[in-house]
Length: 336
DNA sequence: TTTATTTGACCTAT
DNA sequence: ATAGGTCAAATAAA
Image (cartoon, rainbow, N blue to C red):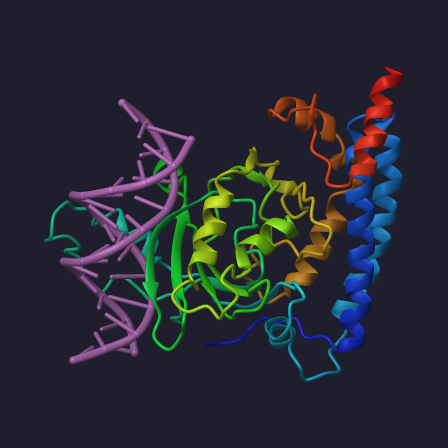
């Protein structure tokens, strides 16, 4: 496997970057619900984004520095519970993907797939794929349909195969594989994406998968003894929980690098809304460039309120992770 | 009734 | 020959 992309930080660099991102994350998490009820939401959002950009600028600067440590973020992420998501590789784009082949050979019955040697394995060099390690494998804002599951040799866990829900409707060839890597609490998953989404599909407002209590309930062993055959039930339960989440339509394509994830998680979760660019530039640079290109005022043309109103959010009973925010919200509503 | 998941079989790359 | 990726019928859930 050719490793063309990796995020390698020293412990100190990682701590700084995490602190900065966590700080802005908490800030956005705290302020975001207020946008729903603030009399001048753009003013509030302006200040919020100033803070966010400053913190992200620091974090990106740190992460763009050459790493001083040999320890990779992937190894670090796999070694403990810190929910850092790391991208391991980004292969070149293939001329023909395997997913594009299947529709051609979609023949009922046993004698299907008449065209030989067109399918490629996901780890082949000509396959466009990128790998993440995360504790929230379903938290990516896209809708997926599971189409297979395999026991993988040499591991205790199965690998689940997903394709974009809109493959048939819109010809989107994006696929995703999820495999549990360990028995930590929460467990770490390896997520392999292949083919970028062409469906500009819906995005997730997650209200379940990022909930630490829910996650803990999924990962805790109720029997109090080591897992054996129950290893895969974690993933299965998480998949089922994903179906209960609400969905938002996709933002305009030029805004997709800015996470539109209305996440309620108190912990830091690195979102992978957008696949890494297939060029030689790093994913971080890509993110930073995109961030520079789209100024904050433009992004706020669609306010949180507008999105919520237009997309079916229940403004009568908005969900607040923090009870204090609920009180603030209720007080504000009483003023109207 | 519709839609999504499960799961054994099929198929291909190694 | 085998491991891994996908298909599609059966099944479950909404």
